[in-house]
Image (cartoon, rainbow over all chains, first blue to last red):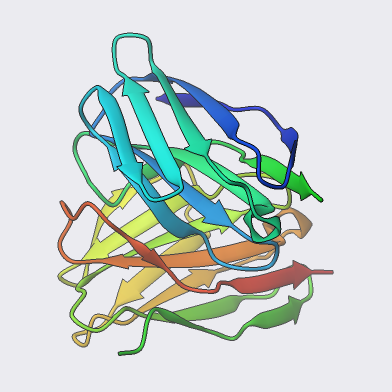
Length: 111
Length: 113
């Protein structure tokens, strides 16, 4: 099975940088995803890592170390609208549609 | 181009009743996955439909069943509702079972009283 851990809550200041960590233990691995979910809304795709290293997408970057079972999502130049839950999800190696999600990290951005 | 649409958006049911939730995938997508998201938790995989068949199933009882139609839309049925079934039910669509990206619908908020 899959076990995914991420911090429950984080707080950061507008304009700052924040790093949200995710550790996982899996029986199979076919990629790690990060999603953003605003309260009452659907998760939206942010990033995908399948190989070790850093993937950069504008203000958001995601890093993966498969040997350590570790990933992080880096958010730069924080904006108030970045206040949301950030979900780490590991994709099963047999079926791309089946992902195991962590419980999410609720990020609060303060002025 | 319509994204993933789910109906209804909100639903209140009584314990023991049955419920059917509906999902229309994003245009061009043929695979639908269903997730249950309890308050304060991440989505939990229920099952996935492709080519009108259940392809993968998570750790959910047989009270949870589904269907996919020839137009790729899908239904999630839950029988003998329990209070613990109260959650946000999310549908995610993708192109094929090996697609990298899945698009989520807005979800159906089910409350069992």
